[in-house]
Amino acid sequence: MSRSGAITFKGNPMTLAGEALAAGQAAPDFTLHYFDNGMQSLTLADLKGKPTLLSVVPSLDTGVCAMQTKKFNEALGELGDKINAVTVSLDLPFAMNRFCGAENITNIRPASDYQDRNFGHSYGTLIEELKILTRAIFVLDADGKTTYVEYVPEVTSEPNYDAALSAVKSLL
Image 1 (cartoon, rainbow, N blue to C red):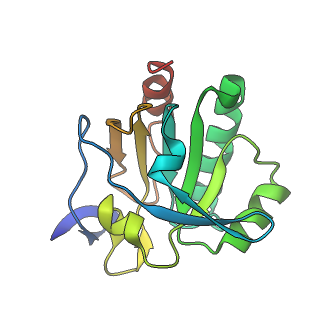
Image 2: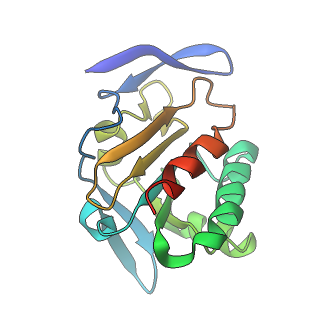
């Protein structure tokens, strides 16, 4: 299933693969990849036990995505290890590590959906025309239930940071 015109990119309507998630739904499973002394996998099961913020971006090599990652990194610092925070994109894990190292991103883990785009399809974030992920935020409770969802209507716009952070903090 696809959602035609679900979001826009620079004003142009785009199609998102998969179905939109809604608050209250069980979060779909996924396998993302990151590089830490070799290629590692990250799944939904790895995140259970703590509230989780999933910050989805098209690419860390763009201004708005970099800003989104930096803002969440800064805001989440006070929560320490009480939560999980993950930036998800289709960037290669090596590029994500380079960005996070250069920008001192330590409170949000980078993870890539580059291998098979299973996250993009399951979470309804893959832009069919561009083959990149749209900008979105998901907050999951410790059991993996979705408690907050934002698909940013215009990909080049920033998400609602305050609403996402409030959703995470309400689970503590």
